[in-house]
Image (cartoon, rainbow, N blue to C red; front, side, top):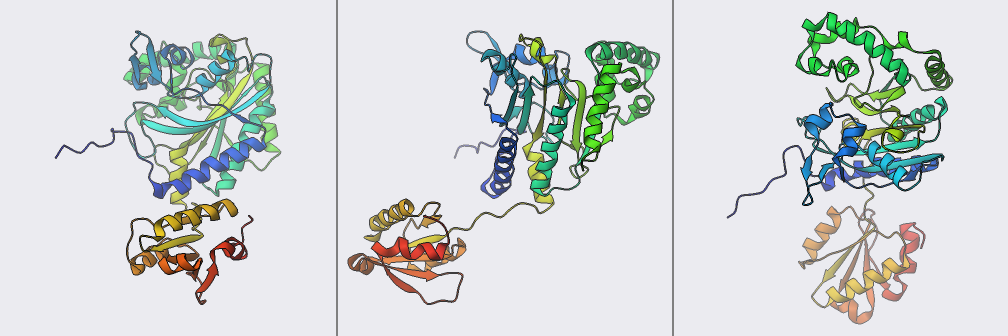
Length: 426
């Protein structure tokens, strides 16, 4: 017997038992964002590697260590997308959707990073996201916050807290970078290997280090907030003012820089303590420079993404998964002659009763074994048809959840008799 082939390390199967939570998240997000005026966009899973090298930054862990990159048969370097913002921007530019236009997009799909697998972190993971274009004000950033907050409320999730910060303008970041680099050079002996590598290429990322031995150094570092220009400070003040006038609570985290190079001005993360080290369930902010960085006309952009697997875990841990809708009917077929007639009758019922959840037994078996499966399915009713019922044009209706007598119904009257019992509209 050949060896069993198992799933690749870091990948995972999504099994039927978990799908209720996935549907709850995906369907709920779609309904919510569409109510806010967002339209879905779908981009390829594989893009040119240069797209992510240019957008995320060549000296980031994602590009250097985590991307699944390969040469195709033409010798072109391609990568499995590690995130979707760059792809959405690329699609917007290429298809003329974002130049001098106001746009709200949303997406749902798999991303890929060769990270160390752990709770809530996979090498193929799924994200929901929202991206906006052409809007310069703090109001669109606040809208993204409200959208996420309303989503947590819809899901019934607790223990999700908002942290916000401002990275300022590009000029602000350049000035602050010089100040931070000097501070870090003065304390270079305290930097770990990753931070030493980032010192000349991406020093702001050092502030995002999770190394416990560097936390005191990071806490004592100069704060970017102190370097904000007046325009950046006013923008962030307006953003927090909007939040202050709502029920959304937040904390300003001056060390919050996000993991991608393209962010500017407002950044934010929704975090939880219930998932261990993988505490960020949603993150985003403003990324005005990315559009021109990828070859488009300079414009404004802001968005967020959230990991579905982590939300599924929270729904399950907090017992917020909505149960599947039980089937309406399980059809029991007694005898070989009923197999064709039963399927034909079932299709007729599905035509007449929209939304009918009907399972037709397959595989034969005794009346006892089939009724056992009918009860196990949690169906409300069993429709029982045998060879004598075929001859008489009847079918027997058995109540599985109520203590009522079994009744016989003419097959040509079945849909009309079922409708008031099922309480669904035809």
